[in-house]
Image 1 (cartoon, rainbow, N blue to C red):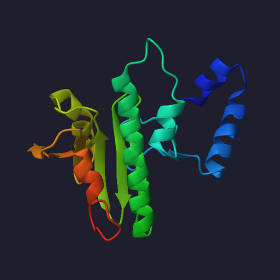
Image 2 (tube, one colour):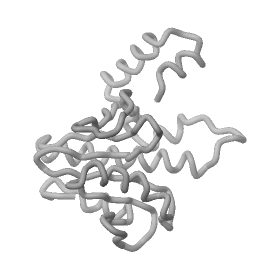
Image 3 (cartoon, rainbow, N blue to C red):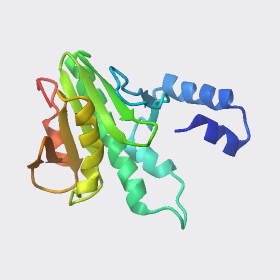
Image 4 (cartoon, rainbow, N blue to C red):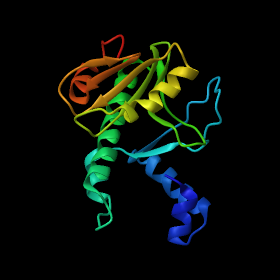
Length: 185
């Protein structure tokens, strides 16, 4: 969420929008995921990603109109669902890793980066039943910069596969595998 854009659209100061977002976080109605910047080889953005605490709440609050594509809304909801599960999994494990996302100034983005003693994973979430080569590009870029990261693409299909260094998993299988006792993703 770009707080400056929200402030401009609502015709209020940016600090006011920031204060309201902090209230939502304090009430546990939202959370922010910071940008992964460790040993960054590319120029990354600085603003965290904003999520509501529940994908269902996001879907019910998200304005819909003739210019909004349902697939776009579904994709954001799926990403929020994965964020919720990753946060819970990390909390149950005892916080031996943190959740980030990665976005370069040129717009290349990986939805989630799990980094810490538990391991190092880059995770891209796609609302599709058939991953396309362009769906893998952000993970490939991340893999070029961070050669020791495990690269995962989650999608709505029903089979596993591997393309180069990238493991492609059904999102449902991935979410079911996140258990407190699990040592790795």
